[in-house]
Length: 249
Ligand code: ADP
Image (cartoon, rainbow, N blue to C red; front, top):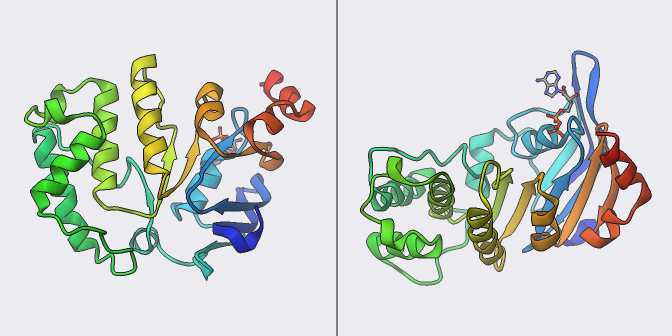
């Protein structure tokens, strides 16, 4: 990926915790409308990079650019307004509201976010039409009137994705979206993320390498806070250094 094509970039991204360098001078370019995975053995620095990109952590040094704008010093809420949204943390699910009401609440929140920089909806919908559309998109149509608390784990996460999509962000970041899911839910969420990424950009930390192989267009492999390899899954998975890093973990 060349820096010109990137929607989200990092240069020299470094994070030290009390003198320990968790992320060391990482350069990253995420191309628009792709699914970009961050992988690597435990302790590689994936979560730290994720938190730096979403501005939940401030880098010790380095810069982050979103759509050509330096966002290194922008607050997380303002980054979300620019269209860079982290799923799950921002999209609380209310257990005692129905699936439909959860999505309605999220759609109303979008208005409050003041997302004037985001692309406008292609079609004008009423809020309810849009809510039903989102529920359908994440495969929850038949559960629309069920309380969120009664959903299975995988379907709860699907609802979280629906409430995040309600914000209609051009860039979504997922921290292990499939964690704790069974094979059926993994299949459903994978298909959903594929659909999301047709006209959006997705960055995800993912442990399950089968999911990465199936879903991701581009993979950045981290180890000990540095980039070990990058490219498509086939390229990085056949890299001897990557194999060695995984075997040692
Ligand atoms: P990964 O997500 O790849 O497992 P992390 O980004 O969570 O890796 O952690 C990278 C390294 O930074 C680890 O050695 C971890 O112990 C350390 N680390 C992460 N967060 C903190 C923190 N808040 N304080 C001190 N050390 C941290």
